[in-house]
Image (tube, rainbow, N blue to C red; front, side, top):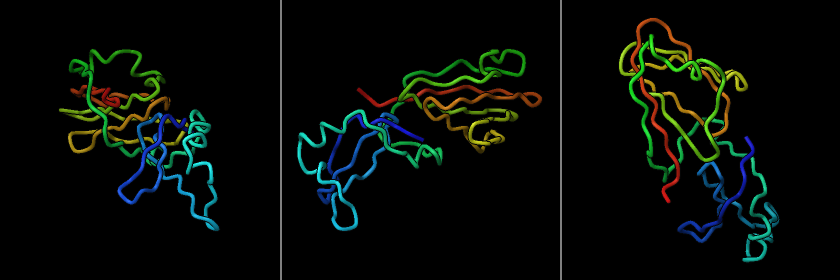
Length: 153
């Protein structure tokens, strides 16, 4: 999944990483002859890469990023009051992650673009990746809510 570079940082060993708009970090080392990224060693080189897209494998794997905090929680929903928008394909905004937390019963979580069809229950939270179209399907009696997360400001 393509994500824009929004910042850069250095790890404990001094290697550079890109901070992506999804909140994941990805190393962008300059280690010739194996990896040639001479732009990463200068401030102007890194500044010139801001906004460019990198493929985020961690988003592809639905991996939860570090450094994000919950800023909103929906009320509890049940099989009779699930918002119609949740049942149709929809998406979160750029940089917004979410978790579907099922308290009772189960729902089906669909990410059709990625051929993901997952049962979400008390043991498994649904991970919602920013901008990725998804929908839910109610299966019998259920009670759940959604928590929204973003990078702390």
